[in-house]
Image (cartoon, rainbow, N blue to C red; front, side, top):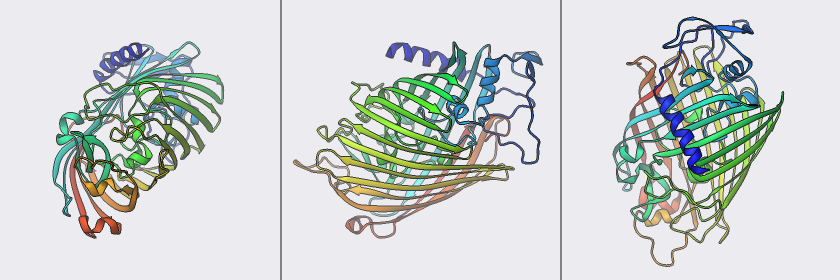
Length: 471
């Protein structure tokens, strides 16, 4: 099964990655908001004009399967949003959320390519602060087609961060989680694995408002948490990770994931089995293991601009340094998205909690983030966090002493504000120059090490492919 899924995904990646953006006159591109003043358009039932590379311009027959694929590119219902598969794993954002991509039809297949890449310079104050020059990035080719009574999708996700982030971490004050060179990472964020996802999905429409979905991935994202931070529209312009990552969405790269989901109207219930150990420091490998953990998620989409979820998971031995400790994780989130003329406003409120099943120790993290695109090319955003930290942070990046027991210590607040502007040097590549500033509120147990008011400044160049006006 693993080899079959890997083969399918790699073939789709090679095909989709080579495609050029499609030009489809008269058709909204993925996630493009409809003009507020324009009347609704009705597609011709049997043909539509299409202009694609390598094809003659003219009417193209549009059978039911093709029309259904096209409708999903501008989803109006929860079922269409799920079948769009523009988010990480099987998570869902509000239906109106834009998804910048390149897209082309090849026979019965719809080929798509998503990506986001930053070249970053960051500088931080405090004794634990550091400067760094690095790149955070990911790319996601995928292919969809109608197959039998449902829709078949293959998708891959890759990151070059193992090559573009040195020392197996980049500077991020107060961050903790995972290891590098056999010791815990502190004040730094680990890179993503080269293989972030290799997945096959099948969506079987049982009725007008009922969808049964299956997801299988040697490397993938189980049904816990909201859309992971690298893919959330509310975080799309922020080049660095969240402090609450390991309480909220660190399972977005997990081994041997199997998920089944049932959607009825605006409600979806999912359950996953997966391997619970977080990725190790060998970031170029496909890391797998026995299915020893599980999760479940309830998602509700009450309207095209809203999405909420609650999820619960039991993780078997997630941390390499504490192999005998199992964890319980809970998350809840609400997302809001609002398209408007010349822009879009995306926001997320998120709570995540981990609890040790060994000693009952709990860590909670809270996040509020929001990004506004206005006047087509401008973005402003904020991310506000209150994240629980453990006594492991006091030890720094050193081998843990014998008999060390990790315990909750304090909370840290982070306040980030940023701006960037697209300059578009290359067609279909949204190129931006931007900067953000982060200030911190430091809990008393940490003030002797970090001081009371550390600051981080980040400058970057961002690259992202897009079609039409969808940025």
